[in-house]
Length: 274
Image (cartoon, rainbow, N blue to C red; front, side):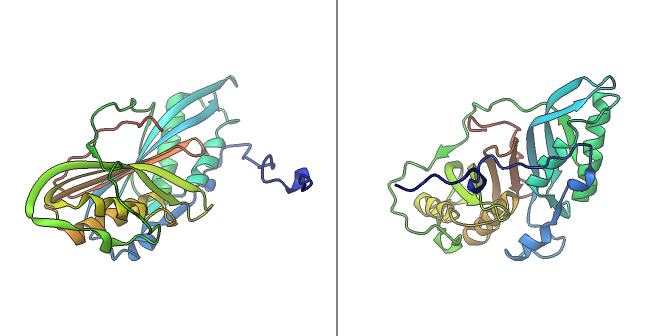
């Protein structure tokens, strides 16, 4: 029988130095151009509109008398911003509020909005509170299709197919999207909703394509942009909307949406897994 590892060898329980005071420099912006260059998007001529909606579940600060305040919050970063914000850095940044006094709740909200705008390079909407759990019909799930799958990465756009002789308007969903964080290697799980008008998608092919992200390392926002651009190029829809609702990690979940200019932006909401 193998002897148990010494405590200092275990990956669990290791001390992490969280910030003791407010520090905006903890935010780590990443140029969106880096990921977009890999999928053929160059410059400012984006083939989509969109937003990254973040839900923050762990937010606290001290009021003017030193009494803790707690809140949840929603951040909306526009897709046209030159930078995305790395999620671990956002978590550390929010933790830097824990022991810092502020005169009012509004002062906290305004400070976060200003700091995120500086990091992202564009105005960021910040509001306290979360959207409600979404119990509406989110389209038809393709997860029950009896398909054989043996490709788990890299994502393969060649798997996509559509019937040009059958033009439809429909919404499809899958809870089987998984990718990996390129920074930590940790798994990222999401439900994706694809609403489109155009040649009918081959659903089995679409499911195989989505599962081909399973071993792929890419940020949430970049995965959604890759799916959008692959669908746009391979299936030629007249209208397209792609939204992913990623499960929470580190007190944050990210919900990127990309659409053609005529596509309706999905209403804000949260999934049961969030």
